[in-house]
Length: 244
Image 1 (cartoon, helix red, strand yellow):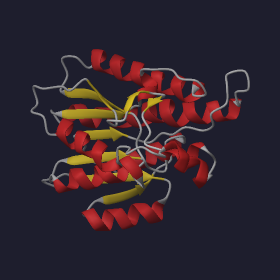
Image 2 (cartoon, helix red, strand yellow):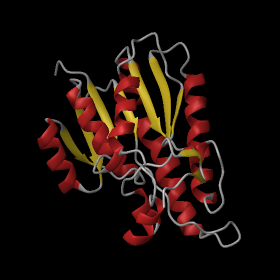
Image 3 (tube, rainbow, N blue to C red):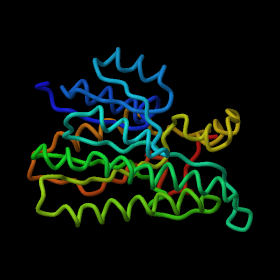
């Protein structure tokens, strides 16, 4: 295949799906992975990409996914998410475990599996989707904060360890983005999720995808280490101006 290959995890919705569309529009052949295969297949048909089932929390699934990818120039680690808003004192260990597994270990599993192919490409790139939660702890976000701080640390270490090799490493940290994120966080409670964005114009998945495509299009000698993206009405994790 003459096209450059981009791999996007968590691509069945939100930032992952929007990024897959943006990269395909820029000429990449996009391999998309997620658990919801029906959505993946529809998206792959739309963008001319390749859909492969992927559960980043399952090593066998990651191995099977990577085995079907012959070459890779770009990896967008987007799979992740948050559960709950409980305090540390009332923290649900199972929720914390899931957040660590999908955000941190999921990123590790996929990166390890594809890193040899990224290096072999001669011009590889890893883009990790983080969060403002990776930079600023906030009340009720302990588990997600801890997980995204870990992703940020891992991203930085990878950048250091790959210095001198043909792989760039970038981190994009969004603030408030209206996707399925809050619905998942609140256990499917759509009304509660909607209140997160009440009186605010949040960013969209397409806004973040624009940043992904820009980072991915930089020349080989340019590495965009970190980007923090916030809605105009947001100045920090919990400081938001609402027009109510």
